[in-house]
Length: 115
Length: 115
Image (cartoon, rainbow over all chains, first blue to last red; front, side, top):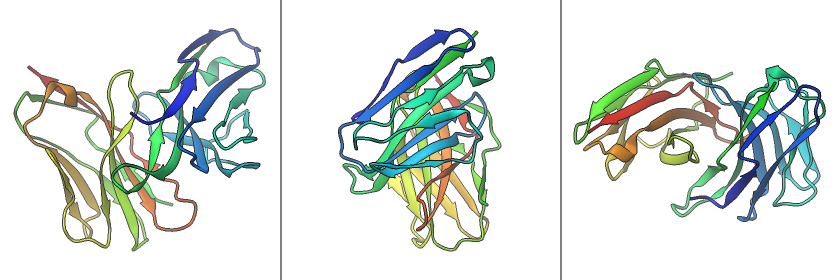
């Protein structure tokens, strides 16, 4: 499996709480991504980064923010969680894999429930 | 903008049999990549197979092969000798060459392999 990690794996919190979803990778990849995944729906890109101090919003409107202070770390923060934020959040990085392809590697995901 | 359509929300197959998952896409690009990703239950999404649009030969990876029809914009995945471990969500993805290298995903097909 890929060397990309997400914590926590599961999180249940109340409305209005501030939360940070952690993502780290040990592959030295410059490009990193955050996706939102709901059952039966496409993966929606919410943020991405091309390297340290580079962050961009994706095509899904979101009240979240990201930071990229270190290459290996790309945390996602929700300042005030709402029930509409309930979803699975996938972190990914892009780089060369064993097959020699430039591909995306995905973390295991964080399943967030906001009550 | 590109779109990716997976018309089969759910599929099932008996162990050792062959199953084909369909994917169509819409694009005006000529140079691009197509992917199939596998997401087993509660596990990380991994790349199964990729196809470069400029290659006429269909990609194969062990029991996994694709039928790439560029003119028809079709990219189906064939799994031969299905195994219980093939049970997963399968996502088709499109990525144009150059630019941001951010793929567009379909909604996924849930495949269940029965013993």
